[in-house]
Length: 263
Length: 270
Image (cartoon, rainbow over all chains, first blue to last red):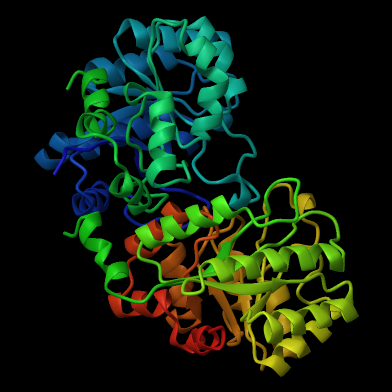
């Protein structure tokens, strides 16, 4: 079976709906069943703690607790650039904890991606060779809890940042991939940094799915499940019916992320 | 560990009835979009679906009897194109009571449709629905309602029914067979499940683009497999992923794929 690297998984507590499989052990089990080899993982607690770094420390500690976790989980740091000491926290995550990516939640942490601190953080990540993961949403807005936020990341909220940070490698997951790509394509083509999308919300199988993947280019597509928020089999079904050639499938299932994360 | 190919045997080796699908009109015409219909059936066969129960609803405004007739004639055309696969549900607007009752007769007795489809023109608990439900009871056919509890932009569908409306209707007509459309159609599915859990004549199909983990397990826990129906509503990967990925017994997945309680309706459509 082809190797799979998943860009979008979580551990930690979600305050708005009961999640199962949100510990490293449970997440690892369900990923084993699905044939996922490596998981980029962040801690939901980093979104909701005032001090996000406490969540990053929890994530680091949990992954360190088992050799299996160290082999399978690729931790991503959730940093809030609107909160003091973000630079120190980010450097600790990368230099001391060995985290592989930066993950941003402007809609929960109440800033815009074009704010000065956010741009500085993304540029710092780029200097360190660290990609930036932007999950567009965690739950579909139609069923969000009344205390949850109303916003998602959209093409409009990304455009300015892509221009201000032209060297940054960006991964956009769990969004309206086709529409976002169409709107961002003119900017993407002029940048040095790469932009990747997942297909978790692409609602098509067979030729329609393959056609969309080809139109974006398999060099720009990565696998993302949004586990434990969503059933992973929804993504597997798309790959099952896809008639992409193996090399294209390899790109989207692992090669692009392998290269991006220097694995 | 089963990979997705092995999991697909669940559909390949069992009868699969898709209780929530649509065929559409060619844009700007009153004719069936035959290419869309061909693609739908092709995709369905690829995923081992045996039957597609289809309707052609109009979502906006308040469609008049002529418009609903055009929709239903398109469904009848699809049924003729694929008599072994496509079963029809008659779309009606309950606001036109007399015409709606006539249209139900025309579609069920004349065109061989097996149920009716209601959209979001009235709440399921609105008295305007009552004569329609009484007609469905008389003909012994199910009624499939567009549904959801929208947490964002509820004003976009002001008369969208959620589980509470279904429970009220079921309480008034315990002999009716009422299907809550697409539990994964977007909205607070837990709200609706809790509200209609104790209404035994309310069923739900699992279709819709939402594939939140736990949605199938919660539906199973609160309503039971006997009250669940497989469906896709234009969302094949999500609907397949939900049923394949859920942690419920395989025998109950098989029951959901072809709920025995609903088999008599399929036979009637032959």
